[in-house]
Amino acid sequence: MIEARGLTKRYGDKLAVDDLSFTVRPGTVTGFLGPNGAGKSTTMRLILGLDAPTRGSVTVNGKPYREHAAPLHEVGALLDARSVHPARSAYHHLLALAQTSGIPRSRVDEVVEAVGLEGVARRKAGGFSLGMGQRLGIAAALLGDPDTVILDEPVNGLDTEGIRWIRSLLRGLAAEGRTVFVSSHLMSEMALTATHLIVIGRGRLIADTGMDEFIAAAAPAVVRVRSTDPRALAALLRSGDVTVSGADDGALAVSGLSTDEVGRAAGAAGITLLELTAQQASLEEAFVDMTRDAVEFRAPGQRGARP
Amino acid sequence: MTAAHPVTRTPPTRPAGRRVTLARVVRSEWTKLRSLPSARWSLLITVASIVGFGALYCLLRVTRPPDNQAARAAFDATAVSLTGVQLAQLAVGVLGVLLVAGEYATGLIRTSLTAVPARLPVLWGKAVVFALTTLAVCLPVTLASFLVGQSILSAERLDIALSHPGVARAVLGSTLYLSAIGLLGLGLGALLRSTAGAVATLLGLLFGPQLLAGLLPSDWSDRIYPYLPVPAGAAVANVRPDPAALGPWSGFGLFCLYTGLVLALAAWQLRRRDA
Image (tube, rainbow over all chains, first blue to last red; front, side):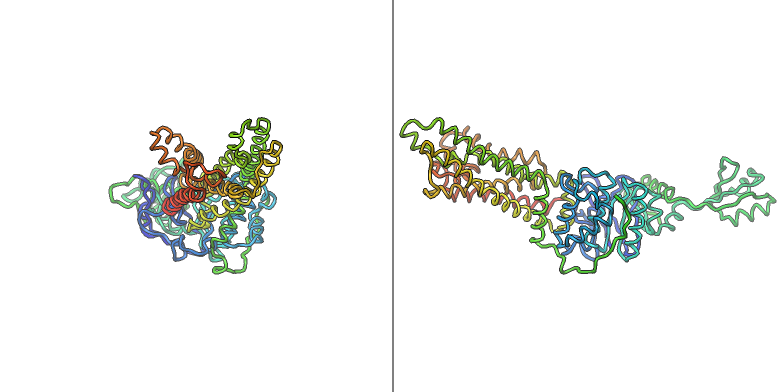
């Protein structure tokens, strides 16, 4: 469980994180989305006590991270795959980390195997590919068998197999009742992994909601309709709240009406329908839509928050 | 590299048994030090400097022994055999800098401070491990360098015995001085977080004050000189006290005080600043 209350961080005159409040709950994978520079990494550093907040607070499992006596058992974190000395072997990197908390060598071997690095653990970490570096970072995060897992862009540099592995790993961790908080800029990946979303833009909270609600709220469903007389149908449907636009193949894209309403209106007017489907927006479209708003509406004092 | 073993949970043994303690951090820092090739190289250079230059200088002096009674009386056999310490202090000091500043340069410090969020144990752990390592490496090496040097100098009957007053203290003092220089480098690395900046500051502190003092009027510089870091710290490594300097142990105490001050500043910064 991660709870941020009024979390604010200012670097010089730049406000990196602005009055963020959110809760990350156990048992689900919570995605952390935002455009580049939105403050995702800063927020994660604040959670881990690496940076001190200018105002506000954030707790992990009920306490500020710095006050935990056994921090590796509370939180496992992957902040930056390159937070490793390049001249030291992966094994000794993990061993030194484990020893701070009295975690036995057997657990080091266990996580090395779990992330698939057993063949290269004795090699210098500096020679690792980006993907191997990510696996090493994930091994470090899992060392203490933590209740909360925080991963910043874990799929960066991983191949398809690695991405699928991360996906099942994260879901598995959540299913065991752990809190899983993952940032990513790959929307499609997030749509497959996360069930809850926290979206920020310019350091402010834009959304803290379920994945399905987020997509529905951000970009309402569009009805695709193909008919024998698109021009007449468009004139019939168009009104104050309803927008109609033409697709290339002569079909119409109608927003503001349900499929039932479009079908009834066409039937009443005697227009024959050839196709009538509801199209759900993708997470990517919803995200672009939401964050564009956050960037545009920046009147003083206004919170960029919509539902 | 194959993927996708299921991640197994170990039986819950937490939390009391798995706390972060200073002893555990010391162990972790020892693992870090011994698994770093650059640390091994620096220590090897330290050893080679002490023994190699000591022996070389002794050989040089034997070929041109002091030719009159006054010069023979002024000949300091201990200092000649320990000449290498002058060079070794640079290797030890730079290694001290690297142990902390290297973590900032690579980003490893974020991992270290996430594992030990109280932060200060990381600095104290490094200091304890590095001080003990330099003592363990340098004490036998300075002793060996002294003995090798004396056996070379004995050819011209220039040698001195370890039992001679002040000699054993100077050999031990050289080791202590090297350790303290290492800690000074470590403190500067933690304070400045940059390898280049900390090495430059270390060299400046070791050599700068004497040069600057030389520019002052002599009654001023005479008054300041004993309190400068190197004249104070090196007093413990000299058999024959420099009349202008402090006594061996009070001088070394002052040097430790300077080092302690840098470490205290570093600790304060570590607590306060964002990592």
